[in-house]
Image (tube, rainbow, N blue to C red):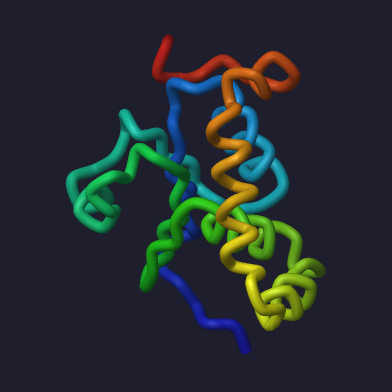
Length: 126
């Protein structure tokens, strides 16, 4: 049986980035994650994040913090439960975690370019 949680997972993202906002909105539309932009972090949420939290997205659950590629993987697994066994299998492949993080960083480092393809208006700019 899955553990019960007091809060849905909170996806923390750069709410000044159109591509990041688009990605966060997709996650929210397809699951019950709560979106929290960097500009909206509560002091308690901020205290749970790594010092360099603005370098990537994070998934806050009641009992854990996942960052960067792992945050996106966990969000996808939460939103699309059919992916859980896929990620479980990938997790046993040597080098997978490193590859996941390199792929995340490749996308994050090109988010301005990716934002020319897909983007939503960033809430921090309202």
